[in-house]
Image 1: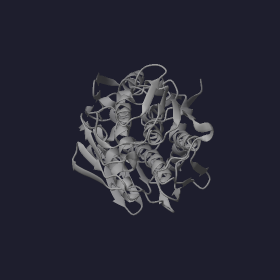
Image 2: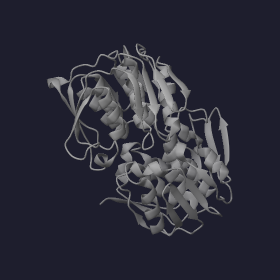
Image 3: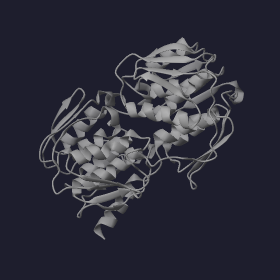
Image 4: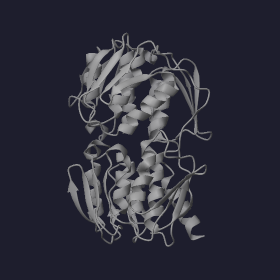
Length: 433
């Protein structure tokens, strides 16, 4: 197994860090562009496993998508809601471990009439799809499972979407809500989507609604649990659609500044970003860091000593592992709550962070919906990453203000940030100069 030793920073992290485009925005934009009428170009686009998988699956479904990694662009020929026929009359999609590709493309396939088979890596076969599949079945899709019901591998044959009242339980993944919303304009009748359980990762639903509006489709939200999409609306192609820098990816460098007492700026981000994870900086402010917002981007300056806090991270759960990684360095306990849904991500992130931080000497309690982490001096250790990009990047930060850490399978960051360790090394070089 490949491993990578990440040494501690000998000086406070200081510098400007450019992070790649947002996966969440990129893959939503790919779907909206595919459904729009005309040619769209995404700029500042993310080149990663997840975005490449999404684009290749769209091509397999009959769409025309081209990708230029050097120019950081995707070009998409939209279908105006009339899905093309896959080559050979059917499609076989392998989505890897890309949750957005899995859920968004399930909903897209239900619009068409062609048989589509879905599968992914072993971890993807464990991730929940059932709540979305219930909605798609209610809309007339025929779904057959090859293994465990509600999970990949499966085959889907759509029949178009009739619309009407639909009920969806959102408490395991907000991606299922976003998937149902983005295809709703092409239903035969208005769609009334009723969310029947607690909402997790609300900012991602808000992101979807905002992006739909930007592309020409309005979602009415009379109350948090009720969403209405009028039939007959159409997405308008974008000659140039700029993808924001990834706020989740930025969180690691902000945390590096906070835990080492340094100062890091990430250009192109603000608290008004589409991505809720941009508000991770407020969690750091709650631990004593200074946050500045300017035309240059967001800047975090770390304090001489972090202090603890209690924080519900339900809305920004992708950054909860980042906060957990630096929590042991605080002068008082850090309590992270509201993130039970992290247990159904690429891995059970609550359990995984607890296990690997303990291997580094952390003093913590694992709770059903989060972690209680007490002050402790972390020690060097070799840590597992579970083929989970966020585990690898978060645990790399855990060693920066301690004595370093050895990361197993560092290449798993290719899911969203293939150059992460190079960029971290560049920040170390800037800080030591």
